[in-house]
Image 1 (cartoon, rainbow, N blue to C red):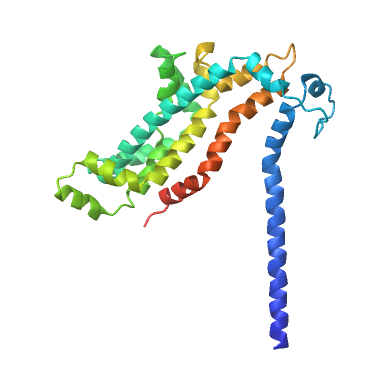
Image 2 (cartoon, rainbow, N blue to C red; image 1 turned 90 degrees about the vertical axis):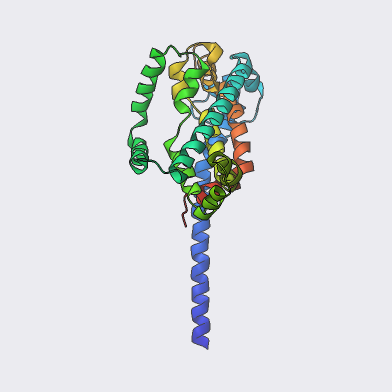
Length: 288
C-alpha cells in the first residue's frame, strides 16, 4: 500500500512538473507573439523627437502622447483610405463568397464529365508561387486598362482554391439522402443549396468570410502594385505615405499610430468570432 502511495505521489509530481513546464513554454511563446504588438503600441505614443533621439530603443516612455494619432490623419487622408479599404473588402468578400459557394456546390453535388480532373487541376494551382500569379495578374489588369480602378483591385481576389476546397469538404459531409429526398420532392439545385446546404455550412461560411476580410484589409503588395493614384489608395498605401512624411526622416511613431488604428478593427473582429473561426475550420477539415 505504501509503495502504491509513493508511486502515485511520484506520478503526481511528474504531472505537476510537466504542466509547469508547459505553462512556462506557453508563457514564453505568448510573450514572443505579443511583443511586436506592445512595441507597436509603445512606439505610437512616443513623440517624434523622443523616438528619433533614442540611440538605444527604450522599452517604456515617461511622456506618452496621442499626437501621433492626430498626425496619422493630418499627414495622409487616412479616413479616405479607410473608406476605400472598406469598399474593397466588402465587395471582394461578397463576390468571393458567391463564387466559392457555387464552385463548392458544383464539385460536391453535381455530376459532370471530368469533374475529378478539373478539381485536381484546381488543387494544383495552390502549388504555383504567389509571385508568378501577381505578375500574370498585373499584366492582365494592365492590358485591360483597369489600373487605378476598384475593378483592378478586386478581380484577382474573387476566387480562392483553398476556400473552395474547404467549403467543398464541408458540403460533402451533408448526407446524400437529403439531396435525393429534395430532388424527389421537386426541389431545384439552387433552392436545395440555399435552404439546406448553406444553413448547415454556416460556421464554415462565417470562417471564410472573416478570413477573407482579414486578408483584404491587410493587402499590401497588390494595392501598391496596381494603384498609384491617391483616390484609390488603401490603408496600406496610407501607412507608407505617413512613413515617408518625416521631414527628411521616417516618421515611425505616426506610422505606428496608423498601424494601431488599422489593426484595431481586425483584432476586435477576431476576438468576437474566434470560436466560430475555429469551429468552421474544424468542420471544413473533418470528414465522416
